[in-house]
Length: 383
Image (cartoon, rainbow, N blue to C red; front, top):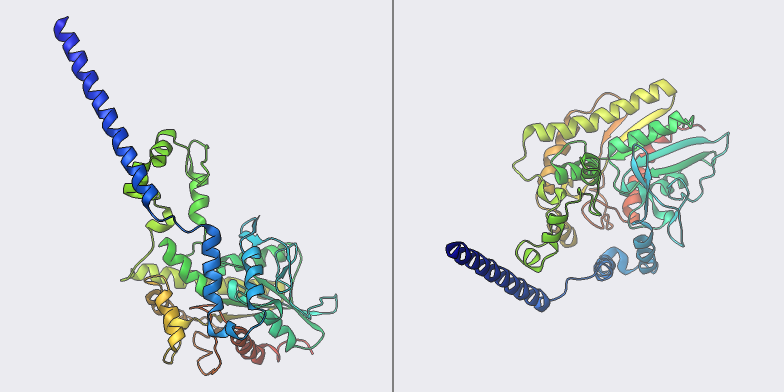
């Protein structure tokens, strides 16, 4: 009994000392975290982003620029779930950005009637009009260059890849909304999402949805992971946060980097071109005209960069420029028969500023791209 009592005292002393040591370590970690400079708040990050955009040469002479970016940051972060395509932007009414109940950005001058020749334009944020007011979007410039009996509808959406555009088109056809002409202006998001997820054909935020759906317990934490009280408590400690920082997300863990697997590159190309072929098959079945344009991107321009454009390239996520340069030439080589256009560097001859980053266009860029598209579609549109 005496030996058992001494053993009990020894174990108790060890446990007490361990607990005191852990408390001391946790206290020191809390002190170290308290002495760190505070991380920028969301409001500070948004303000920093807006100020960075306003310093670009294009916005320096635009009186509307600051008000536009205020509206953009209010409109572009509010999304609604949409079956199959995952999301669309919520309705918004502003001076420079207006979005209807279906998530469609307003196209000034577009009035669709039963007798109108209707053109639906699909794409990602470049088609949507990232960085420009309603009347400076690509669909708006197309509308301005077409006869009055033609109406253009902007089905571009922030973050959409070609698969989501194809599904959005299919959903419209299922509802009986058959256009006379469909334009796809796609490319950048197919490449960017593939690099971010290391998976060809993925959409933004697939990982968050997968975490929620794959949870075996059905108890979902706020970050989409299955609830685990012990894990969540450990992550809340100052020691964990000091040593490991924020938990690594799925997106952070799987960014593809060069050298890229040839099968990975082929998967991006094949998915992209398969969507174009599928859209053409729908056009043949439903009787509309289909044209597809590979979206211009800054990494594929065929001329020297300006100083500002070089900064855009430097700010591009690591490995993405190399992936664009691996994927886009393969797209050019694999274009199927039909009205499919490889336009990666169609803006190279322009002298005015075309870019606000490595993929989005200024109003001048949208106007120049619209002029190229109009040369192709005006002869095909109804008189």
